[in-house]
Image (cartoon, rainbow, N blue to C red; front, side):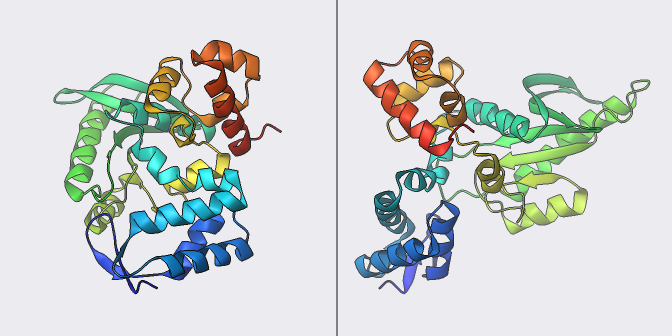
Length: 280
């Protein structure tokens, strides 16, 4: 058994079996299955184990219990696969917001008091409006830091100030929002809480973190589907397939026609999407 594990950031910490079991249950494993998988993983790792090895073993055993759960366990890796640039992540964030009842527009230019700004996503719901910056990281171990929070908040304030000068539009923009696929540093979170900048990241905030927003509505990205290679993913995004749900909601023959992917692979991808997002 490994007493110490090495995180992707290079930091060492004590192996937390309960944390492993919790992650397995969130992916759909029963408490009994999660405990059994944790037993198997503990027996196979030796100190100092790295988190990648633990994840790989846990996913292997989870798939033997339930293929859909094994796929869901790959969510964090799937978010890193939304690159290499950040535009796919911006598209994906917009779809997550729409799944939670927001309207969302991407890739806009908004006038600020001092200068114009490129805005990743402009979201709205009820009477609230949000200027959203999407910070994408392609690898683990790079938390979003306070410099990013400062930058996002200053851009939002410039846009807010300009909007307040438009007659009848003083309440058009209410909040700035930073959404990232990694964790945030404690200083970034502290700054957001102090200034009112909304932050959504991996594991934060506790009840509305990025992974919980995804899992609650089954808004998994197509990058989570094991049968979709990088080449297939490029074709899927080109043809406006962003969510696994987009595929699950479509008839197989229609997906084969619209996806632009060879039939055998398209059928495999469709099957995996159906497992993750079964239609009611």
